[in-house]
Length: 80
Image (cartoon, rainbow, N blue to C red; front, top):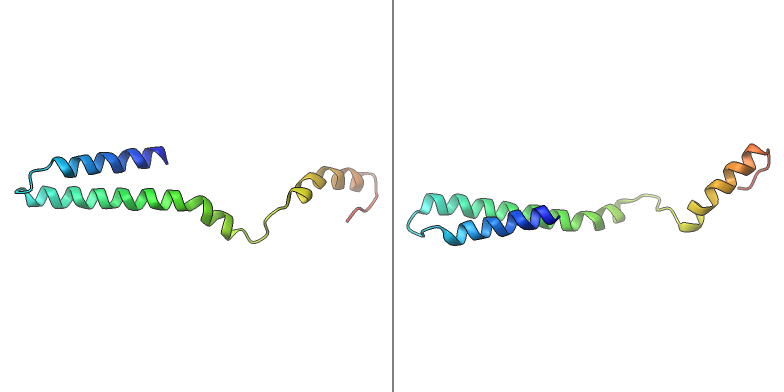
């Protein structure tokens, strides 16, 4: 995410520094800047979308109980 912020800032500085009379270069730099903004926004939204897309979120109690279930099964006892 830090790299995406850096790229976005760099693209903005390049766009700000271009001579407005040079429209072709300004248009290309604006396109790059917009692409960097989009990439940064996608990366920042990714963790929350991953959390929402989980079909079966694991609870802490389930995760902590896993070793106990394995030991019980190995000993022939059912715990579920």
